[in-house]
Image (cartoon, rainbow, N blue to C red; front, side, top):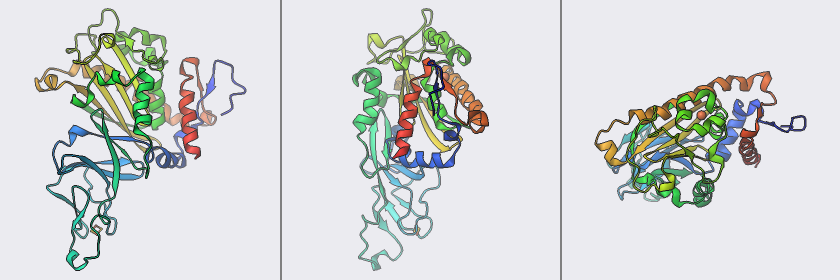
Length: 373
Ligand code: FES
Ligand SMILES: [Fe+2]
């Protein structure tokens, strides 16, 4: 990344191979996804003991399960006997225990080894030591975040700190009471693009006027191309005639009960590295989780969260879902359009960032620094 021969308006992006090279992706798995706090599961998706979800975190398959005591726990999805995968389905429910399909070693919902053929003849086997390998788990904003690090980084610094940095304080997000909201709609996108292209795209609004007609109609300041999310505490204001954050600017739902006067009629976007985007509007929250699959493929799960009353009363959320669903489709199409260029000779040294995108350079610096040690 040489910036020496660039005019002052431009800085370099990462070179193309960062978005295609399996070696770079493997380093990202080891030094980012398997090290940081990784947002895995919506806690309410696992409401009762025995319900589980399998998620890929870096190179590891992780089981998140609701235990008997009501707590969520996470384990590596690997049998301690000869290493068979315990669960192959993405979601499911067990009654009391996980049983390995190979030789039937059986683990309770706290991960302890509770049964195995001939286990009583092997009294020297410690059932906790040969239990499932636990993974660190924290719940916040209604999601379970896991870290595979032996000693996880500070959740307060890395996750909560990012929100504080963006909003100016931590209380502002509490007003939306994310943990009490309900998923009104979930859409999963299979994006044929590197996860970093998706992050970079989310970080800038230079593209808003070109590809997001509906969004710029609702948030006129986005048409200028300046990403509101990089002014601390700033939320983009709804246009004068706009009644709600919906595809046609028509009325949404009642303001979430805790949302303050100065948060009303505003949209706040937050990037929580490495894989989460949070979008706050007065009557709902849109929460993206990315699951990077390979250098050129990323699964994005997007939740639209509303109050329980809105969801249970069967109110029509479609106009509000449609706005960000279109934004997602527009964004992901742009990322997919960009991905093939990453292996082109035109992009060997990367592309350039204009001034309203210069803050993406900080993401690149963060990334290269993480990969370098
Ligand atoms: S590998 Fe699981 S019981 Fe043998
Ligand atoms: Fe966008």
